[in-house]
Length: 193
Image (cartoon, rainbow, N blue to C red):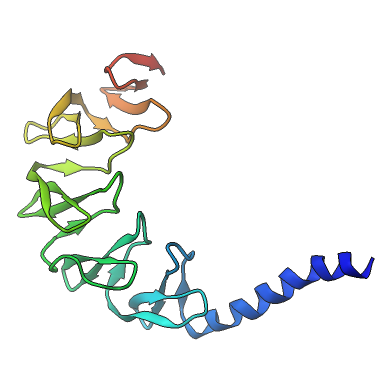
């Protein structure tokens, strides 16, 4: 019986001691890829699971890690870091999103395009809005105003006919057209409302 009690209480004791260092910060997010977004005095950086600062708290904003990368903002521009804290892009983007399927939507000169995990632009800046990839497709808005979907080569595969389009999940995506909200499949066939 004593062994059982130790197993029940030991994780709680470890958890309490592991959380003591969080009091050194104003905010600590969930640890992803071995690092957690942390803030103190309105400046953001990243700490490891023991509370050691890995990326200095010098940024004005930061995203959680996804697929081993994150975006941070200093001033009005965003750049990307890998999970070791190494900068992989210059701070040139006016908006930056998390990586999905190895690509991240970024904004430059009021238009969105996509970069890969090396920081290379792989889909040109030609969309007025964009979201992350899900199941190989990403919702994008065109200059004419409609939302559609592109593949990872940047080819439009679902015509931009929607007022809004969401990311694909489990083979379907939520779209809005007029006052109707419904779900489509990857062939642009309506599945259900």
